[in-house]
Length: 143
Image (tube, rainbow, N blue to C red; front, side, top):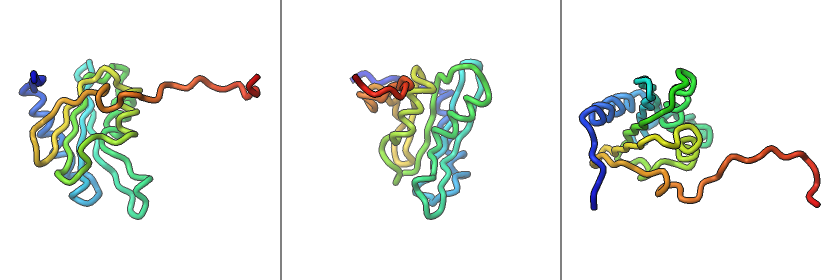
């Protein structure tokens, strides 16, 4: 199997994401840091934010980084870097994948778990049958 290579700059970004994860406010087993890199060279950080007593209101590091990039520049995101604790989920969650699809569909995605080697992940493999943008409804009843 021919695996995509990881550049020296991408290894540096993974190290930055690991440092960012320390700023997550949840338990250490859920810590995550992300960086959205844009075509114009911008680097937009994100950390996992946990809401005590309400996991449904918590947010992963990837959406935070993508939101920061969206707010900070019109340039497209070309690379998403994610570092996660060893006990975190193996793959990005549904919200992360959907936002990746909608806000950075052409971005390379690099993920490293605390206990493993960096991996390049494919959006098409992780989200083979994605939701697409819905057309607004007119409110008319079907014929």
